[in-house]
Image (cartoon, rainbow, N blue to C red; front, side, top):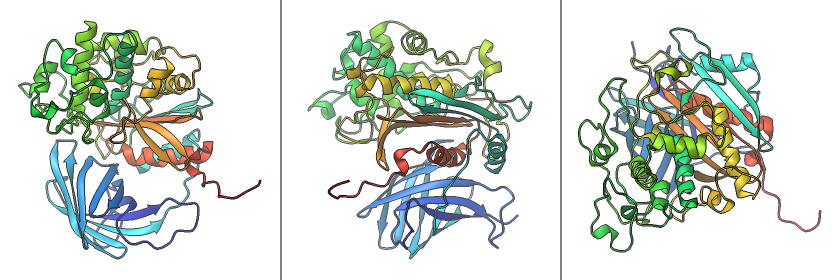
Length: 484
């Protein structure tokens, strides 16, 4: 069979007519085609968003296991370096920009190198409703995703909860709104709420030296902490100076599981390297699952209980997140309620799912409705309205950037259109998911899938929700003028 090329089409998000652009910045949509231009029998799609700042290029990929760490453009030469989160191996994209077309060679994603071709186009408005079962089934088939579950927040309430497709492509068991999915990295803000509850109870402070909280292990330090210590605030906002960049691959069911201390020191049976500082705290932002594991251990040492129990007692039960657990491995009694993992083609993976002893970073099993309850708790608390876990002051820590990078304590913060949103995505073995919620207006959404190609579908459905519920992502700025 001929090797496929990936035809990348730039999607320009604008309410006005698009203008021809030059340069590399923009949103890109990818669909595979054969060299003669006909569709590939196994169509794969992904989105790529790039932004240039001088010669530096940053990027975000959805719909593929690539995470871009850094990039450059020098003249017409483009270089993007990252990691394949499926196996934690390096990935590079290198090639040339010519007007409105880029040709890149991709190494490290597939067993053999391949090329992608990029061209600019205007984005089409995506319309439809998540309540349209026929449309949703069509999209599941188009994107090779077996099952999806969605919760839409409106007026600080769960307005819609729907589920489509199958939890297991082999058995055909249907997805319901009670089907549990792996939240992957959305575990991090849920865990952050538990740590903030500990701050509220006086167990430690956000700006305390974490080594004065830790009892069962100590973070190795040296000259890098001369100007100031590593703190819980830094650990939960990815600004502590760690160099791991994790991404945890997890463990097959039945495999020996490492302790947190073995994970942090990179000792067998851990399958990742040690978590260590590589820069002074608060000098830069680098996403770090290892930092969140350090904070998990600090919380456990401060409270004197297992993490899953702390999260249950302080967050899950108070918020009535009745279909959620941080227990790893997943208890046998809950396995019938759990979705199975699937590969990018929508087929069952060899393992039904992976096990994540890094619970705070990647270990939550939950539903979109339960995650929506947590988002609503944050929305209500920051407005001073009745809430069940955090005070307004501590809830605001979850949606206030720490000053370096895009993160607050737990959530990423972004301005989209005319709105400010707190959000987090998740990517585990065979699962993809996203959570977004507005800072002030009481709306948002959670989408969870049991397919490795779920990112592109999630991106499309989010645009549908924005259109259907009229989010201010789509609002044009108010013109500068006097009078009505």
